[in-house]
Length: 258
Image 1 (cartoon, rainbow, N blue to C red):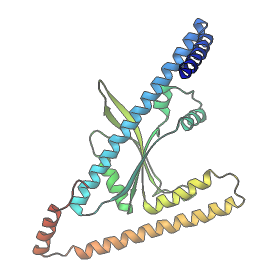
Image 2: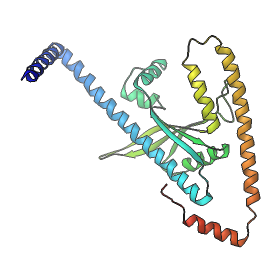
Image 3: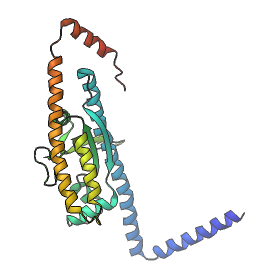
Image 4: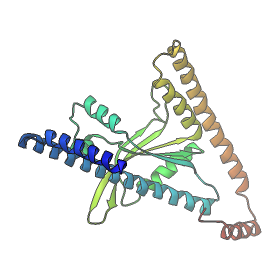
């Protein structure tokens, strides 16, 4: 019985608060607009989440195809993220734009993000091109920080793509940012990201210089590892007819669904 009394008191306080909040037509109108925007924002984030799922599935399909055709998975891992609301607000503010659903869709290209980690540099470009040739993918921007690294040493291939997402009663084009990099590039980027958000490091400039040196070493190592793999593949290309038949038979036993 006590619980019901407490609930009644709480309900009464909420009702009183709402009456105060909505005690004039102007306040009612402002509150309605605010609530409509909140609902719309949640729906927009849901649509970005669905767009991420669409693009992720495309990469998973490509990885499965490569594993069967070439007996090698070019993709090591796939991670996704939805940009935090405060990050969206800060970015719009930097652009001199107010926070609105229309401005998010127009100015924020990385609200939905997917990161694909590959073992080798050539896998990055092969996977990227395999995605971009699909007829429902539209390339908006492409920034190649592997060929043209950032001054701090950052390397990655960045793509902004648009993809149609089908909902219950409509279809909508959604933008997704895709980052593709090697395992070594991702390891470097994770450490550099930690430095970016640490403001009280006394020897920060020294660490920045060390990271730049590491980025150059990592780039050289990626190239050497690619060369070694290509040498191994070239040596294994000389196969007898029996070897080719046995390889084809072995592919039939692969677990395609894994």
